[in-house]
Amino acid sequence: MVPGLDSRLRWRALLWAGLGLSLAMLLTVLSGGRPVLLVLPGLVFAGAVLLAPLLGLVLTIITHIIWLLGAYAPGGIGLLALSKLFTGLTLLAWAQRALRDRVALTYAPHMLALAAFVLVVLLGPVLTPAFADAIVGIGKYLMMVLPYFLVANLALTRRALRVVAIAVSAAATIAALLALVERFLPGVSLSFGEGINLGAHTDAASLDGGLAIKRVTGGIGDANWFSYTMVTALPLCLYWFQAYRSLWVRLAAVVMALLQAVGVVLSYTRTPLIGLAGVLVFLVWKRRLPLLPVLVLGAVLGLSAPLWLPAGLLDRFFSEKYLREGSTPMRREIFGMAVELIELRPLLGHGYQQFGPQFIKHSKTEMGLEWERRDEDGSEPAHLLRAHNLYLDVWVMHGLLGLLPLLIFYALLLRELGQVVATGPPPEAELALALMACLISFYLCGLGGHSQELKIFWVLAGLAAALRRVAYGGAVESQST
Image (cartoon, rainbow, N blue to C red; front, side):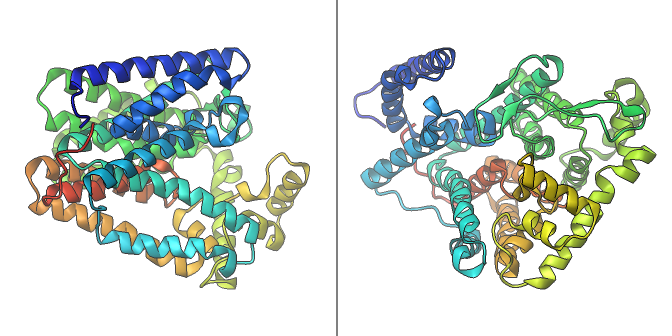
């Protein structure tokens, strides 16, 4: 808390600072990216974040989950990308608060496994033959672990836990709204670099009759990653609906759930349905959802599907041409190559983002030749080809030495949340159950996609660590808001 500063005045000042920064960002875009317009409001906003670390944490979460927003860098200066800027400011805010109030670091058993995985990543330049890509990997993982660290060490009150959970739901809802813009306003286009842009991806080659479909990305850069983010965030909507009796909160929860569900449908992706099914089974088992209404709703949606599903979705899932020429046979070949590459270097792996280059090197099929052509002409670099399975992808890159601690990290997160559900205070227990459902959805989506770099997981993992601390008496009530 800032001495002598009234809470209402403080938040009013933060609101004006945020509005000023938003206006400056708009003027910067309209003026062709001249960052000078951001200097004064940027300095004011930086001061506001230092006074209220939770504000910086919320902005860090949103800009990390929605890659399009996080990639915006005034003047094209990479270090000024919003995700990096807000992360850096929030890290400074945490440091000054921790030193001032002597707040200890958050600890949870899963952090030991995470530390082992991070160590493997840091040793990548030595353990694997891909030195340059290993250095890139260290930078990428740093920007995953930092949001985790900040959430774990700043969300140290019940109020702060709710704020972080709201930020996650808000980010997922904003992404769903961006997906609707992509779908229904195709003329809107926005790109801030790093290959991430606003605009649906058109697929005209995989369906019978040549029907073109638009797969939305929601500002997350890829339709598959967008869909995984939606189903990972969905269980929080049920938490808001069940944990709060306010009509407006429940109405907001229903609207968010509908938007996120629509986003999943418009992504034209099958894998999130596995995650959604796993979550439903878990929530029915835990008696948070009644079985009969779930079955009835499922039957109604299934029977009426032809009336409301977008054109081409059923064909993409079940048509003979797609099963013959679409992603299904491609995935079989990709999975087979992943197994072959694992057999070559099972313990240490091939290095960060090396699946694609190694696939091209060892493949003797038309798919391998096609990827080689794309890599040579620059249309699709080889490193973009990944194993389409989180666990195989990590094994290929980091070997068994990296996969085992990551799996232990994943398992311990569920175990610790389960302990809070069983023995924690009711408010924390309900949030812990929702986070378990979120993680289960994410883990299941990993069976069909290399989703380990999605920031929503790292934010939720940090929230799990903070929740455990608050539940067992480690709350820091003097925390600055």
